[in-house]
Image (cartoon, rainbow, N blue to C red; front, side):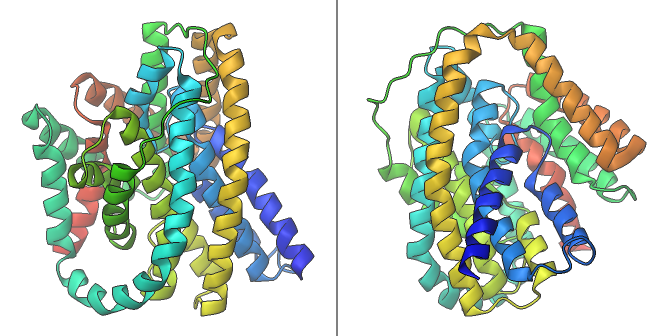
Length: 395
C-alpha cells in the first residue's frame, strides 16, 4: 500500500507540474476527467490513491503555475495578480527572482497549513453556521472593498458588473466545463493578446540567489485572509491576497510572496473544509468529495502529509524550471511563443467545451482585453464568479 501511495504521489506531482506549465489546462479539468474515469478506466484503483494523486497535483500546481504567469504573462485564475509586479521584475532581468519570491511564499504556506489545521477543524464547524447566514453580506462587503480600494472606482465597478453579467450568462448555459472558456479568456488569452500587440522584448535574465524574501507581513496578512476565503464560496486566492495586503501592508516584492502563500494556502484549506464543514470550495476538493463523500480524520491526516511532501518537492521543481526559463527566455521570439500558447489554449477549449464554449472563450478574451485597458486591478474581473454567487444567495 505504501508503494502505491508513493507512486500516486509522484504521478500527482508530475501532473501538477504539467498543468502548472500549461496555460489553459487547469487542475479542475484533470480532476473532472479523473473522477468520470474512476467508474470505468480506474475502477480497480482505490479512491485513496486517486485522492493522493489529486492533492499532490493540486499543491504542485500552485507552485509551478507562477512560471508561465511571470515569464509568459499567461496567468492561471489564481495567479493573475502576480503578472504586473512579476513582469516589472522580468523587464529588469529579475524574472527568476520573481518566481522564487512566489515559490518561497508557497513553501511557507504548506507549513502554515499544518500549523493552523488543528485549530481550524475545531473552530470552523462552530462558527460556520453563523457565517452561512451572513455569506451574501460578507461577499458583498468584500466585493465593495475590492472596488473601493481602486483609484478609479467607477471603472472598477463597471469591470465587476460587466464580468459578473458575463459569468451569469455563461454559468447558465448548458456547456461542458463553462469555467474553462470563461476564466481562460478573461485572465489568460487576454494577457497573451496584449503581449503580442505590445511586441514585448525580454532582456537578459540574471540568476541571483542572494535576494531577501519578505515574509513577516505576507504571513500575517495571508494567515488571516486565506482561511476566510478558503471556507467561503466565491472568494479565492486573488481576493485573499488583496484582503491580506490591506490587513498587513507590504511592497510589490512582498505582494508576490503573499500571492504565493494565499494561492497554496487557500487550496490546502479547501481540503480542510471537506472535513470540517463537508463543503468543497475548489474544483480539486469537489473531485475528492465525489470520490469519497465522507472524509475521515485519517484521510485528512494523509492529505496534510501529501500536501507537505508535495510542497517541498514542488519547491525544487519550480526553482529548477524557472532557472532554465530565465536562461532561455531572452533567446525566444516572445510574440511567436505567445501566439503558439494562444493556439494551444484555443484547441483545449474546443476539445473540452465545444463550439459554443469557443464562442464564450472569444467573448471572454475581448472582455478581458477591454477590462485591462481600463487600468484597474484584474481581480475586479473575478466579478464573473462573485456576482453570480451573490445573486444565488440573494434569490
